[in-house]
Length: 414
Ligand SMILES: *Cc1c(COP(=O)(O)O)cnc(C)c1O
Image 1 (cartoon, rainbow, N blue to C red):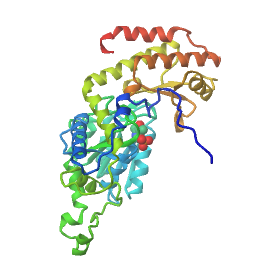
Image 2 (image 1 turned 30 degrees about the vertical axis):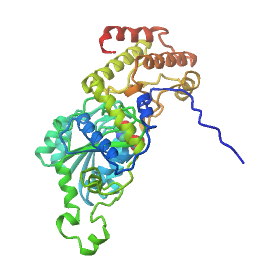
Image 3 (image 1 turned 120 degrees about the horizontal axis):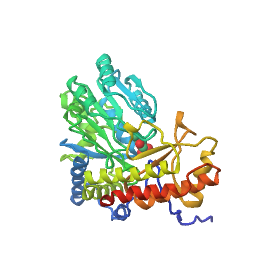
Image 4 (image 1 turned 90 degrees about the vertical axis):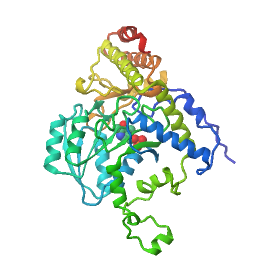
């Protein structure tokens, strides 16, 4: 009989925009023994995760819990539950993940209205607001931090205008939650979706979301039982009574499971919940504001090194996403060969890019547990060595000194 060897994974320094290195405390929490999903010891853990998510999202919303699946499961749960066929959804796109929102909203029957701006820039909020008033959609859905372009969209003005016009504002905060400020309530965000494997340093596998009573009202309206029009037979059969087209992503059923009713829906992903519980504990122990400062510091030190080497950054510096840095690939350099050398010779992973930016930029993440001084310095050292090996003209030896200088200046933050 053929035997398979035990897992033997290489040790990596992961400096991509996700998945990033997982905090060892989270890995340890994942080996905690399994509990039954209605065991009070487990439902206590569920309740604590909800409380920690409310703080992390900076919200007073009653509902904040994870959806089992990768980050897009959070996006899909919100969009599937809120969009009714024919609803107008306005999606301002400034990178790849705007297209993901479009792709999901389309599948649930939305009438899609798009607004585009060049990749590497973000929208002037006024432009989105003007279009929102023209289209009069039920929903404006957009990305907060675009991992594909390294840009971050200011949201508050758009959120305020949406609230005034009674339009729902749904935000993909997958790449920012836990790494850059996300103020769900202050920015008038009706539903926000976060991500594990980016700045929370938890493996991919569940996706934290939060939503307010404006969203909950729609969930209720879509439930026959709440409107008193479920038949006796439907009630007896315990059917879903909901017009939401997905069972797995039906937020009205999910909140009945997460809430005090504890109605059975799915079997909660026990070990993933332990992981998220520990990941959130670490975030709140460090403190959100301190954590954002730390992410900014390592971003600054990385940029100092990149520029010290003589390389150029991609994208409008005024709207830079602090957790992802995009670098223009120097002319005539074989980009994939540089990346392979970094991985094979140094065990350092950085990311290539998508669509119109493919072959033009590399992307380096400074997220969560990966966002550490030794990782930044090692990434710079390996990039410089690989570039020199590939015949690029760089200011040899300058990157690490510039980066160390940046760290020196802000010692107190490390
Ligand atoms: C990573 C990412 C996603 C998708 O996450 P998956 O876990 O791959 O489903 C969505 N939006 C943004 C902004 C991301 O960075």
